[in-house]
Length: 404
Image (cartoon, rainbow, N blue to C red; front, side, top):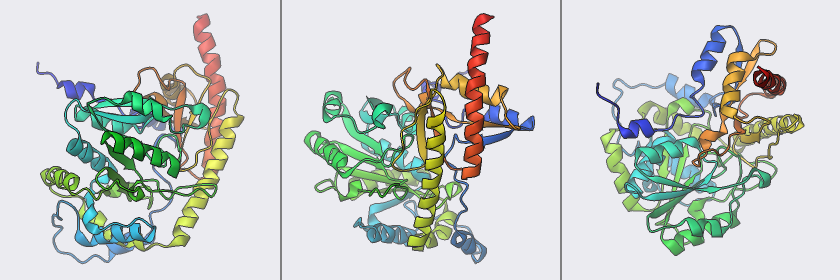
């Protein structure tokens, strides 16, 4: 019988989605599942998006250019310039979500067996994209004790080899919510210039900042035009995840030219989502202030409730809408599955993403989970109560299992 490829075998499962069959089974039994596993906001997609689709008058849904519709790229660039990041529409390539942008950039800038340095825990799909391209991930461990701050420069220097081609960060971070400061980005700039490396920065969560914090884009680093490649998306900013529209943003024309060849191979990104999405960039301060205030309220609720649970520790995220918490369990993969299969409270249970899948280092993060605080505070409070009781019942179940 023919077998699948080594690449297929080596592709990691998504920690965000691999427990979906257990969640589906719970729902079939009538159990409500609070989805804290995935960054799917419950905030409505802005009305402007739907209004554009409703009034659309086209007779043929055509392919668009492989790098995206010109007017959409102009709108995207205009938004960047308004927030103090000087770019041109020619610095953009539109992609099928930020995921495709990351994949195209990796394939455009790194060869088979090249190395990319990524602080861990990291967005799980970074590991998958690297595996698909035969690229080696060199993880730099961060610590929950200091909120997953950027490790010392010495840790990066020690990790760099002749095969190292890039450093990748997510800012603000998925899964930890850590917000990298301008000073930390300057540290990365110095490393990249000294060793002639690309600096990949996933800036999808740029607006989601809390406690008066400010954001500094890697595109504003002096002397880094040839080094910086930024990834962006409408998915989180405008709660339009299903639109699947992202972008590569870089002033390095060689990188864009290489990425475009991959884009031509997949023909074009989604035309409808670009047409409907153009007006989203006209949304003003009131829109952003509203969603930021809502997410900060959600963050404050869930982090407080988590830290009140016996044996649970959760740093306070500075941005995005994720938090990583350590739990009083030995194996969060087992615990998260157990919650879906064996536990409910008031007819409900909780789905979380085991954090082990956000680590490239085998065995790391086994007692941690990533929580996406994308539900309203009422549902977050109910989910936290369910988790608290579930942890206590799980501890009893593990004792019974040992005794038996």
